[in-house]
Amino acid sequence: MINPSGSFSFDLVIFGATGDLSLRKLLPALYLRDADGQLNDDARIFAVARSEHGDDEFRAVATKALQQHLPASEISAERMQRFTRRIRYITVDVEDPAGYARLNAALDGDCDRVLVFYLAMAPRFFGDVCRNLAKAGLNRPAARVVLEKPIGHDLASAQAINQAVGAVFSEDQIFRIDHYLGKETVQNLMALRFANALFEPIWHRGVIDHVQVTVAEKIGVEGRAGYYDHAGALRDMVQNHLLQLLCLVAMEPPNAFNADAVRDEKLKVLQALCPITDRAVTERTVRGQYTAGAVDGVAVPGYATEVGDPSTMTETFVVVKADVQTWRWAGVPFYLRTGKRLPQRRSEIVVQFRPVPHLIFPGATRDVVPNRLVIRVQPDEGISLHMMTKVPGPGGMRLRQAPLNLSFAETFQGRQPDAYERLLMDVVRGNPMLFMRGDEVETAWRWIEPILAGWNMQGDAPKTYTAGSWGPSAAIGLIERDGRTWHEDMR
Ligand code: BG6
Image (tube, rainbow, N blue to C red; front, side, top):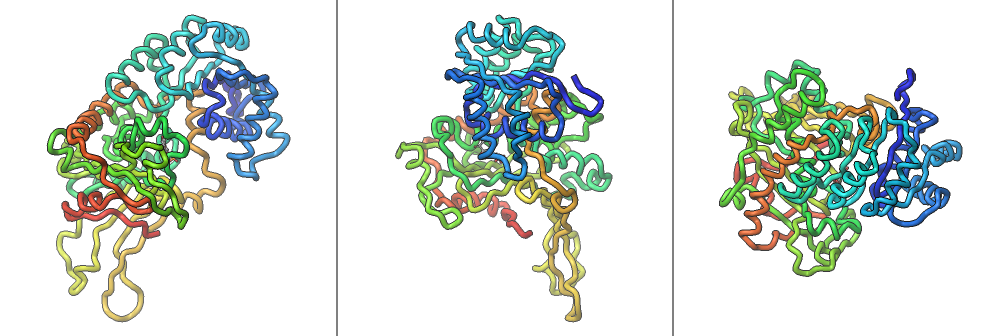
């Protein structure tokens, strides 16, 4: 499977190959891995979808998508030809066994060869596809299945998916994607915490005041109204991406860097989340929906207009104040915030330390602010530690906060790989560490469900915010009631 130069032989089958995810993310990621020499000459890609296409016709579609989604500097005729040559197109209606027989014949029967099924499609098809793969004898020991999020829309549907897929593939063959785990800075969070002795002694309630996790987006629903209007920000972002980030900040050091050791520790964090029920839903959450406004000076419609439903109650913004009930974190709130049509695209984790216990600088009370560790997930990936420093020159002891900055782009030259590049190759390698285990997904839903139930009970509409603002004023009120403020970008 792997040759000494670190490249791989495998067959990758993309179900939903003509869809947005495949064209925008998966094929570009595979192209870049190929360009880096990670794909052996015999690695093959089988594009599967319901529509009828010939191989060449689909290769032309793929070429166009690659030209559109990759930087021009990455594209060359030679690379394009090498990559698209690997692709074959097979028409499969996921409910029709005939298509799977065609797929089986095309794959030919080398049972030891790594075989990856990537289900880039709505989760309601996961069970059927897996059952049909099994009927066609394709659930071989060397096969793996990749499930795109969302894994269900609540606990029961997630359990049903886990059961249906688990009836065909063993847990170590199932790779549930959360692409945030493939982002470089997210992996760096583990390096920061567990490859530096510096942080562990201060990583607890005695020194840390609170944690903020923000995933802000400028985009709206981008033609995904059909999915998004049934999901909303809590299901779409918090249940997976934001909770995974919280887990990496809050988990205990695993005893080894392997899939189960890391995932066991993340699971314990999810299990320790204090349930948010009844009145706490009002006190600890804010949900918002954008109205017409402007982002980067460009006028954009409101969410209801975008999805064509004036009475939609779907939230496009959410804040949740979460508590992790452990000795390490008791009394340290984790403020989770995400939204669409915000003024910046910015994902970050802010660890806010406690103030100094006794201030010796006369007259500096207002200038001295507590330290903050900011982990910038995107853009401009890096880590900065905001410290108090003396302003140079005469004029007494004037103090000001300044960042100690580690910019990954400056420190490590070259392109930052996309999360899907890392994750796809991890599937081929058979390393599930950066994928969600079934019990993690279910435990996350168990925590999310009462919030959804609380909102349903309240029955009121989400609070509105103007597109291009930082969400409804209640989001600011929630943190300010605790005597805290949202971190502002200070780079
Ligand atoms: C996806 C969500 O999982 O993540 C989208 O479904 C969201 O709604 C996207 O836009 C954000 O990902 P990224 O990598 O652009 O931050």
